[in-house]
Length: 290
Image (cartoon, rainbow, N blue to C red):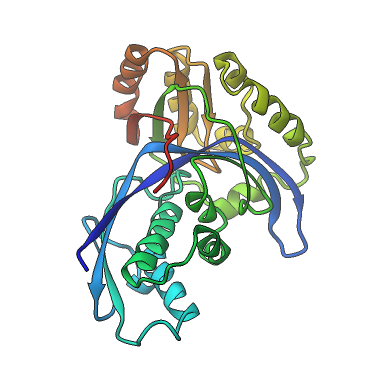
């Protein structure tokens, strides 16, 4: 079988509300996931073992990489359909910055599941792959669903959402890193949100109205922006170009700014890029993942 190649889109949280803490220690959340047109690229071919190579250095052990774990997970679940020496070699072209709240690792893992499913001819449905996905990460299942989705639970309980307004999107990742566990600690003692259900209803009816997006919200933004001057600085630069909305995505550190005018978005990108470890201008993805 010849090599197969697929894109691994980045994602944003267009809305993120942290809800009650669960008995398992995780928090319930309500979020609107939105895939982007830019991302990584992953190729795969049959091999005699599981192997991952990348155009960038892979930190830590190869076995800890989510692409490797995805293939290993699939292999261990279907030992009756695979021989011990049935392997796969992944080649990863990395563009999504790590630790930026853009879902790069999760997207790579989801694509690895799809590619391994094809290379090994397991003929598993997307639904079967999605049932395995939460073992790799809470938002991996999203990248096996559709490009715009409401998500609840830890992020794995998905439901369809309408296509978004076709903004020009500036992504800006400041030169700082936000640890997710630390970010959740900053919410300790604060009341949990109660706007998620209202937001879902409003979005369903107003997704095609650009002014609606000025009300997007992320519970992490206030405490994290208060702590990191790098995020505040980038936020100020983005806001100087009067986007419809500027918002933190996930627990950061990346910000996004939504523009109706492409030239203004391009000017904004040129101004902010020297203050970032990563920046790009992209669009929302609306066509299916595969």
